[in-house]
Image (cartoon, rainbow, N blue to C red):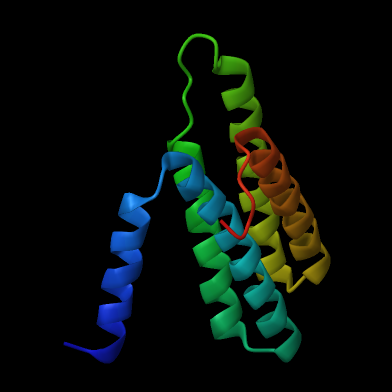
Length: 128
């Protein structure tokens, strides 16, 4: 067993026992972390790591889109979030192609706003 695989298994197990609210919070926090890493590597000129971190952030937005509930009563909010997440993926893709940190700044602001709104709505904070 590789050294890192124990940690990976631990984090996967930890995620499985979290509440759905906490998991969404962790996804938003992941976007912030991954886009910040992409921004750092973009500034450093490390395209391989830039692409890696942007793709990780895109994966989270894709997962958030897949988890939207379009059932009756949720259509309007889910449609809004679907469009917002789609636009963030577009910004990330453009930032990746053009090495544009301003687009990454925009994604960071949106993700922080989503996290703040989620924490307010659920009563969670980033430290819990």
